Amino acid sequence: MWKYHVEKLILEMLANRTPPSSIQANIVSFCSHILPGQDVVEELPCVKHIRDMRTVQLTVAKTLAGKRVGDAKQIKQLNTDETSKLQVQVTNVILSILQNDETLKTVCLAGDIIGADGTAEEQVREIVQSFGEAGRLLEKWRARTVNMYEDDPQLQSLLDLIPRKESLCVSRLLKSYITTDTCSTARKVQCLLSARIIEIAKERGITSTKDLVIYHGMCHNHVRNIWGKALAKRMKKRLEEDHADNLADIPPHLRISFDLMNLHRCIDKECNDTAHYANGHGIDCTNYISTHYPDVIKFPITRVIVGERQDVVWEACLGAYYLRKYRVKWLIYVMSSMDNSDNNLQRALFVHLTSREMIAQLRLGAAYYMAIVVPM
Image (cartoon, rainbow, N blue to C red; front, side):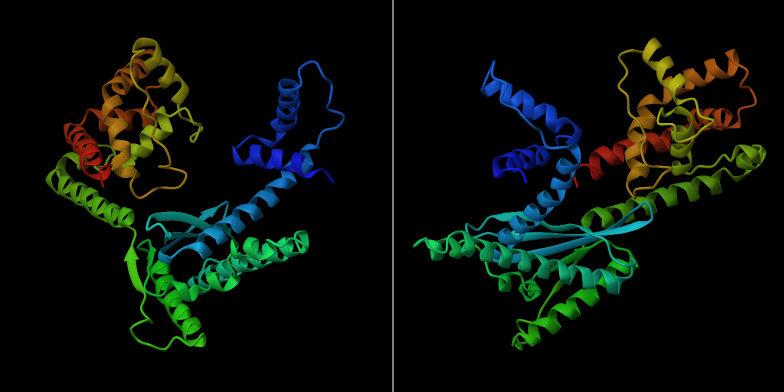
């Protein structure tokens, strides 16, 4: 067991995102700075112990989050969302609380919920349990305080600073907003969670219909993305109808279309240096542009192949439009000076980036992103 001041030092560095492998050297540097010329370090915590301290850090963070929520005057909003990483579903619980000084504060009550499956029923169960877990952490904190200061006459004043577990009951979500994204599973989570909260509130003796109210809201970012996605689909459909004859004359193996996402994926495969596509030439493209046009700003396109964000169709337009002419010059160079004349990806990308209709879409997309998406 290390002394508390050593573990506090480790926790502070972990909280500041110091890599565990660097903390040993930081401790030596810290001691050398406060006691220059003195060899005071006899032993250092091993890297395994430092990594294990991340569990302690998580417990401390959840306890402090529970205290913040327990001390709050009112819970105004609960936002929950599920994502997947390596085929594992992870759910979070984010609360917007009204503090005693009438200011709003956002608190992450849980960001590491891994349920048995991704069903709405399982998510609701885990969300309710996250409140119970925070309440149990507060009770452990109170019990530990009693053990440490049982002979202190100020013990009660210390306990008054730590909320009781009842302050973390989900019934406090009555008259608050439950916000999710717009998918069907999330909508079902809203309904099931609201029903579960009202059920728990009734068990606690709250029976007034005026109090048994929960509001539902949609994440505005997702709603905005639905509008943008519909606009992109409409532009693609209209251009395909107007230029059906021209598309029919293009060899089908090039896979030419007016779909912006198709263009973004082509750029990511061929021009990005992130190695998402084995047959791409991202490093060659980047080196060519940086050598011949050193003042050009780099706008990489991300997450259009490995996981697609809803708003990427417009965000990627900014970089695609800005770098279009430089990528066209590189494509001309590479297709004329190298043995790549049969590279279908390069040929398809050249057709896309020199099409007036695609250029117009990219320009509109860049303007839409800066004028509408970013401000909203």
